[in-house]
Amino acid sequence: MRFDSKTVIVTGAASGIGAATARRFAEEGANLVIVDMDETDLDRVADDLPPGRVRSICGDTSGKAVMEEAVQKATDVFGGVDVVVPNAGYATTGTISDVTSDQFRDQIHNNVDSTFNAMKAAWPALKLSRGCVVATSSVSGERGDFGGYAYNASKGAVSNMVRAAALDFGDHGIRVNAVAPGFTHTGMTAPMEDDAEFLDSMKSRIPMGRGGNPEEIAAVIVFLASGDASFINGAVLPVDGGVSASNGQPPLA
Image 1: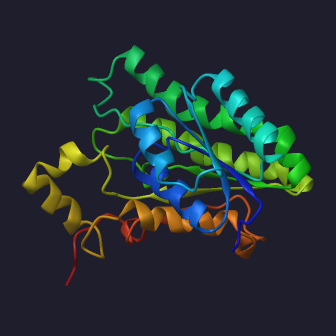
Image 2 (image 1 turned 90 degrees about the vertical axis):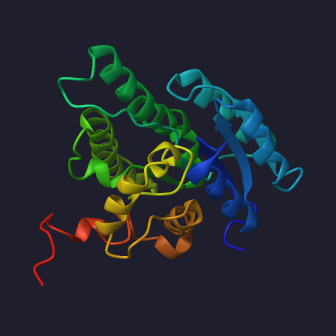
């Protein structure tokens, strides 16, 4: 298996893409430290993973102390850190006239600071292991969304942080990449899916005609973390069913 004796930290691991990623790494032999604010769901995910190969930490990764604790636990229990997956985050909707300054700062704090804190805390351990980072950005970090002002800003920052970190970390043998999911069926999108008209409209914009599943995003995260991607560095890889291939115009024929 590709991750035998490797140790992976996954944030936002209590549900959705993070939970699917933790499960996929476990299937491939990894030891895991999983982190989330939702202790109940985090414990549920941990209970599904192999005993003895997982440790969980309940906390807010937008503060640096939680990520420092995660790295320390990975080092103390499993001997180091090989992969970090900064996945924690959420989405605020609203235009520039709707979003308050506090909402904007909170969106940046949660999505951008959590990614920065993960990289910063893990940097010394990753230098020793010549490991890698695979962050979760979004197609919304590459182009704008109607009513996505704050979220677009936060994910654009994550994508460019990944590119800059890849330049800085590369000569230490550390790769830094990100996935950019499109519409994916998770708890975050569940309220949208209650609106049948919105869901049909969303699917009509996706060339494959459907949203993604968390397991499909997890598979790409694990690939980017693996030796199969050993010369991929600084990539922000769309996993969106083809949405980003479009220039936004309606079908011409």
